[in-house]
Image 1 (cartoon, rainbow, N blue to C red):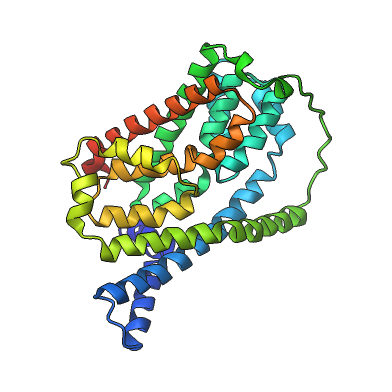
Image 2: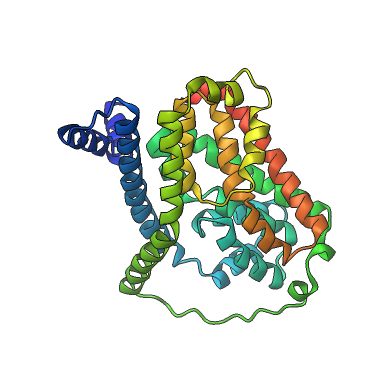
Length: 333
């Protein structure tokens, strides 16, 4: 257990870096125990930590993803039927891009290729909500129990959501240009190890540039919450005394746009101030799954009825997961 705690705290959590930054700021004359010094320490530490983890995770995930180009993923999904296909689609979503906007073009391609609508929606739900990055990042900060329950809950939402949409037979709610679209099987050139490593590094650089502004904003918000907002305010709105905290958090997360890397520092700060775990996870899942920009993109591909059903299924699932986490919070933290 001590070895695992060391791995979680010092390797995955990089807590040695926090101590190093604190010592440096104290040597510079800043008191990290007061609001200004604490905010600066939180800001510097979380940005470096998240960007380091992000770089390592994206490199590994991009390398794995190089074995699953869209055509190969489509062929894999085409071999399965029924709920088994939804499960495979949800699992394949874990090795695809980090945000919902990146997943929508793949969803459109799979739908145009003739894959069952429910299967493509299981993929669409899973891809931003549950990925290998979220598993490792959550594990590094909150421990393996939290990460495991979160990933399992996300996969369940994806499978159930896709299955429900499949049973409702809503194929006519997909825009005509997608249903009538044709995709060609383009032979995929076999990549060498050198090619995969090069592509993975390029993906790290590209994604880091895209994500960095959101990380800075998320860490800035987290530092402000952590050091400047009174704890009683957070507890009164998002604590155990407010039975509607999960619902409020899930709805408040929808208009925002970020990925899990931008949400984590906000979640950390809210938890430190006394917010319930299920509440902050509902907020995070709402942000990364149902962000307003991604819903606008999705509206171009599907009609209002199907979009509304998709949002309703995801929202209900997220709220239920939030309340579940509140119930089991004492067992997993």
